[in-house]
Amino acid sequence: MELLIPILLIASGFLLILVEVYLVPGFNVVGILGFLLVLFAIGHVFVEGGLIAGALALAGSMVFGVFFFWALWRSGAWQRFVLSASLTTDTVAASREMEQRKRFLGRTGHAVTPLRPVGTAEVDGKRIEVTTEGEYIAKGSEICVVAMKRRSHVVRLASDMP
Figure 1 (cartoon, rainbow, N blue to C red):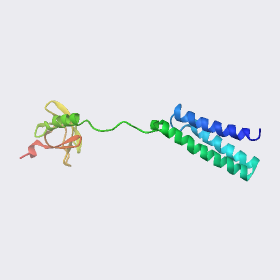
Figure 2 (cartoon, one colour; figure 1 turned 120 degrees about the horizontal axis):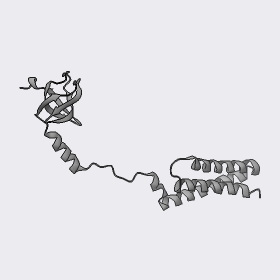
Figure 3 (cartoon, helix red, strand yellow; figure 1 turned 90 degrees about the horizontal axis):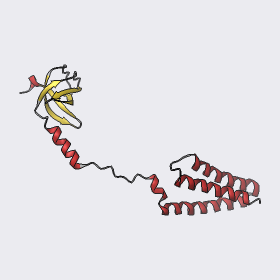
Figure 4 (cartoon, one colour; figure 1 turned 135 degrees about the vertical axis):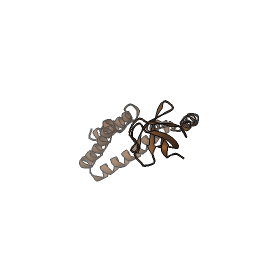
């Protein structure tokens, strides 16, 4: 009976870890509780059974733990913790967006908001985010799109264009 309690506690701990992996994915209370239960059982054996019994319980738990985690690894349970989706860009959509954005180059419009240096302008009837080259441009000023920079267009005052 003395030996049965720690064995049941260790088995219960590993069972809780198994529940954590298959039923409640994530690093939650169930897995931590299972790990603490195994540690408590090993500590209990050290206190009640002495150094040799505790060392045997520790070694047995470690061997079983290694086998347990190897079996989980082979079963594919750990794949739930890894993102398997690829985060690649859609090249067709990206090139289509680039072409749509290029159509504003060289076009003129007016500043909808004050550009200091970032703001909104209307070019060809469409509002776009724009950036100046550092200067302030007042709301309503006539602007010209001179370049593209990542997600915005670079503009200058239309009167400053050659």
